[in-house]
Length: 240
Length: 93
Image (cartoon, each protein chain N blue to C red):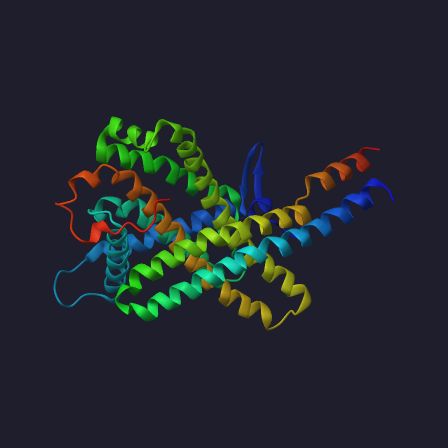
């Protein structure tokens, strides 16, 4: 039994391996990129628009609303990064309805790469929003003593992001594999349906956590100027 | 018992214990979180969006501890480094 799709190797030449993770990642990327390109090829502003354009508009507006509700005031700036994360994880989880497909997110390499891109993106957005000095100052708040703990929390939350997604997606595939040997007919289908739900929830959680981290990195300077904020940005439910 | 048997037995036993004990506390915690969220949803249905989002993020945080235990037990069963080491030694003999 394979713990991750990394161990299924289709083609090998020297140190270069083409394993199932790479293959299915490329497949998901292809579906997303070609699908988006095809849909946005002839956009219409009129009342008559294609069904696919409606679908895409619903998705984009839902993502923007979610980003804005967390407290980022210009969601279109973060839409490219956060929306890609959400759509990639969601589509790679939804692909499990196709037989023979293994979600690339059930490999620790993929989830570690996603979590590392969040680790890099958070300081970039933070520096862009409040300058290098302002962002670095956020590490020594409230006191200098908190500096190592802030650094540790950066690393540990990256690890948590990676292992959480990996564990959830891998457990879905693993449980189906184990059930196939015990009760081969009905239960694996039920668990696949449950796995679809888990995949969507995990995609949402990964996305919303990344949003919260970026929001925390870009909004630290604001308590002094509380007057110009709207009522929405005052809510700050997590100080993760 | 040779070392192979001991390692196999201890690994399987520890994997079960890890998942069993590691999921108890998160289950209790998630139950409390959901119960509190339901109570506050009943009191303030207007704030349902915020409450639901916070609940999801909180549940993910709580659940990750159980996921860590699950990952550890899966590693112990399917990708055990000690077991692989013993197998490699036995094959080399």
